[in-house]
Image (cartoon, rainbow, N blue to C red; front, side, top):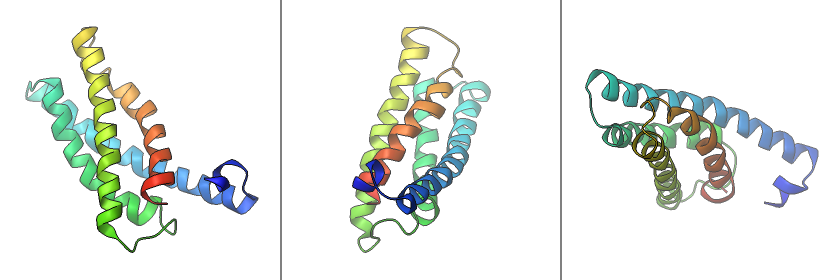
Length: 139
């Protein structure tokens, strides 16, 4: 955590590199999630919250593999996959909860179009999840 706040240039460069890798990977994973969600809502006429569950299940598996092997490579320990995987699942559940909140709030409470939740899902949730992955999951 100290290197995130006041560390040297090397620590800041590494965090920036991680953030860029995370953004690229997260963008890809979010895109896969969005495709599953949109296809289920638009083409299959599945309820938005059900489509959210299906899209998120695909995204969690893909996200763990890509983030652990590329986004956060060289950061923290990888000696206990059960520990890291368990923490990743916990953060993913929090992320899933946030995304479900966006879907419920926007489509259920506000009765807005079903694709609108993709905006906070692609912008707000990833920033929170990056921070948790960096300081807790892959530390």
